Length: 409
Image (cartoon, rainbow, N blue to C red; front, side):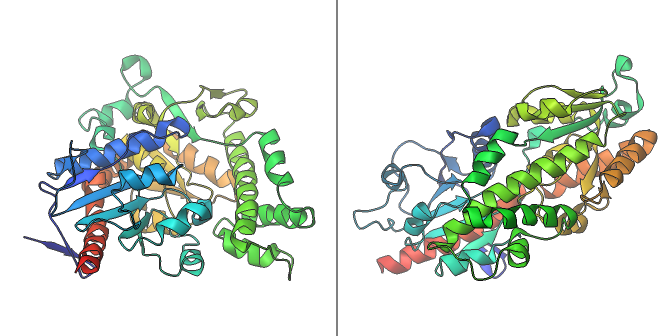
């Protein structure tokens, strides 16, 4: 029996062999934990995750996150033959959780030669660049998901918002989680840009700070000097993107956190936050990805800003905050507005005052905060678990399997 998605049949996952690496070097151990969550979702659907022995002759899925450091080791793991192509009955899915310009060209050049390779990304920003750089690439959008373990106790949610901390209520008024670069790191990123273009890069930061719905590609077209190109245009854009995104991220998030002075705020993230945390704003250090649900389940409200490298899309931060029953103040984005408007209070990312007003509104009305937290938790449980994303993975897998079978025929 089969289901369908966008005209593509989707195989059931019962007895499917799914191979997914769970060891990665990433900040907050995010990729390894996320890979484990995806593997658990496949297992709940009946798949055999990382089974011993060879992949079955009928169907096998090789799924990896971000990108391999060593392509030779990767090719052996992915069961690529001596000719570099896949064995019949296998599909290769790449789930990349960053912006297209974070993709390393040297690795992508090799992956895009594989007929069974499919790229999944959670963003709707600048993805048109992918087919310009790699014309044969097959790409789908797959939103982030959350694990069932991130869902807070529904029965205790209302009391958690209503009661004082000493009576078992939530003990954090406002939680802020995220990363920013240090000033020294920004200087190094800016110095990597050709001297004649550094001023334009700074102008891009100023433009995007004032226009939060403008994607990097739009800012580049408006601010970059006309007629200046790189010998490798993709690499040229990447160098600019790294600095512009990091500088914009620090400036925007720093302004938003400083605007919370007077609200009892807890900040978790990189050490670079410490200088921003004075008065009622307290820095609590870093927290691994796996520990985030515990933090969100303690917070009445959360400043659930989106990832700076995207302007339309959301990340796992918003899903985990909603799953934790937080009343979320989220920056106004197209996909957030479309999917979560019933359970978040939207603010203008260009206006720290707007964010402060959202937080104050939620903290002032505990019944409203509890109701929003309950709606958000319910929405994640019914639409935004990793289990709900398996349809997209299944569609990509089927398309890849058809390719290997056709090549073998």
